[in-house]
Image (tube, rainbow, N blue to C red):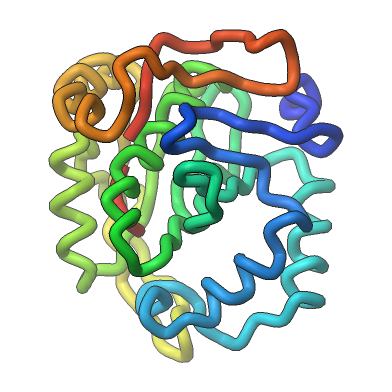
Amino acid sequence: MFLDAFHLSKMPLLYGSASCCLALNDSRYTKEVVQLRNDPSVNAYIHNEPLTPAKHEGWLGRQLLGDDSINFAVLIHNEFKGTVALYDIQPGQGCEYGRLVMKHDATRIYAVAVEFLCLSFAFDILQLREIYCRVVESNTTVMKLHKWSGWSNDDRYTCVLPLNGAQVKHIGFSLQRGVWPECFNKARPLIARLHNGRSRPVVYPGPSEIVSQSCCIGANQ
């Protein structure tokens, strides 16, 4: 299968720099994920039914056995600070970006870095042509951040989805591979404020293989 080439279910994954990186979300982070998802200060725009370790482990096991999603833990200076994912991955075509939930503390500024790391992984590593996302209509802050990052409104992905007992409109956005270098270059000044200029995305395990010249960045969803 497409993702088997990356051995995601067989080995740990780190993508990013010492200050901000993505790690494969597995049972190592169950306690932190459950605490985060049950925190009312961060779950206004996600399904906020109570989450238990057993429920999360069951969902995580099914995800790791699949071949169309990658769930990441967000590590800021080696500490767990949130989750994010690329899913509904269509080889050579596109995927959805989302499930970004970060702790409500000073490290939330790294949400920008997290988004750009995911974009880099999708475009530079998975070699996809398009990434799309959906944002709750009332979440105007995130929509503004997406537009700043280079996303465009895309009605193909606008839809109504169930959320915490209600039918909620989600606004669709997309970003194409052709504009990715321009978007990253625009964000370089902000990237430089968050990262050491020598940092580059690195994928492990392996002999410190440099897989991209990009550094990182992104917005909450």
